[in-house]
Image (tube, rainbow, N blue to C red; front, side):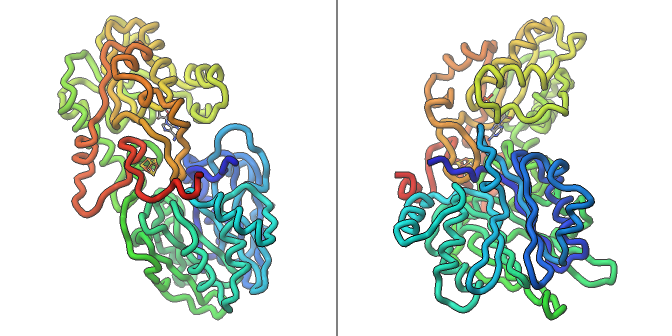
Length: 466
Ligand code: AMP
Ligand code: SF4
């Protein structure tokens, strides 16, 4: 059974005036993390109200329906998913009534023991409404006998493995939690209301804070739960921190490579800066003579700037992107994927013609994008095309929430470098090494998960996948 809980965006706002409107703006800033569906649940202290739908944030929400999401606390979600599934049952937030009241939950990540848990829960009589791994948590919480939600959530977390940035909303409280590895990002910010009172925001990336005028405070730590309370009594203090699990930080390196927005701070570092460093390291590892270096927009821009700076080769915007086409990766058939690359990217012939070009992108997954890019550059008259990638070869799928295809579809998992170069049609093909990637992070404090590049998975993920 396919899990439909891929890379996503989560947000929560607490003690914030126009909470749902603010959460909706935050989701808008986080649209790049998921375009499949969007949803918000708000609480007015007595009831939780939910609106969710398929499509972009601007399609799902409007002035009229946002007014129905009353209350000063809300949580929201953008869903990223692969081919096909349109079912609204699999959009988030997930809402439930249970014996302590009402709750809603949003989740970014992937629970690696979800199937096993689901089987056990169904054997005990649970009736699942969705295919979401997150629904396991609802059942675990509902079946628990403790008299408060906080303890029930903690007990449920002890049953799950894998990656999660979770936000729960009850009628008066909000809980934000990151898994012990801190695989998926989640940060905390502060919002000052018009009456001077303080509210809080948690979101997958800090670019959401910028849009709503929030001040970045810090990351939610791996294994930490933040408890926001006092809404009912109108005395909201700083969130209480509970270190539920000992931290074992292994944040997802792919957030820096591709997923996060360059203007965001994730895992405490600005993404643009890291990507530029990747380009610098790439230039140190692959010294090539060329007339110019161009990025694949937008994914290769920062790395190409870094490459240009280090190598002294001119940077040009040789390919222009049409911003009104969605991401190409999510198209189901190979033919459609190829067409979408062409719809999205167009080279400037006047710049490219008769030139020797280094073109930089962030990653090669199936090889479709790179092949098309080399083709359009040659059609525009490029003399030579050297393709450099600012990450190592993607050789293994992600089980922690980033949507990568099966090993059999990952071109670098199945072919030698020379075979891949030949397929793509470039004169040169080079990848950043794992060591270069590590150098560009300039991080000595903790490790990162980089299993899609080195197959070293950080937990016993096979437990749930069997
Ligand atoms: P491919 O054409 O299959 O080799 O995919 C590589 C392209 O997809 C690169 O240009 C990346 O910017 C982009 N990409 C890499 N990983 C992902 C992902 N998880 N979701 C969407 N796009 C991705
Ligand atoms: Fe990120 Fe790759 Fe690890 Fe998945 S396997 S969490 S994409 S680094």
